[in-house]
Length: 123
Image (cartoon, rainbow, N blue to C red; front, side, top):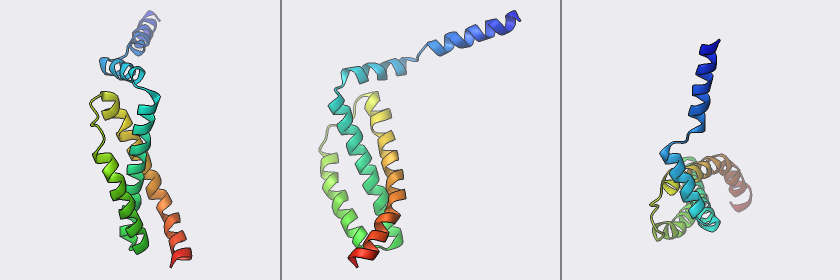
């Protein structure tokens, strides 16, 4: 029985400790303003969303969707290219990849609704 308690204590102590990377990300989060984080999340989500819908529009040969998708993509590309580069682990590991992936997935799922709207109302 003591062996089980000892194993549980080791596990509990291990769970309490955070890695150096986790502590660094938490510190970077506390040092950043909510506006900086929100702008990064918003921009990366939008960029992923536009990119994913554009791929679906090209694959389904929805010409108006491709045209509007490219317009939105390149207008937004100017904002993405001209922003400062992510230098923190918070930006590189959380603010960039997670919202971009969620935006891309949502864009992929919603693009079929957008295609239906284009076919019904704009052709």
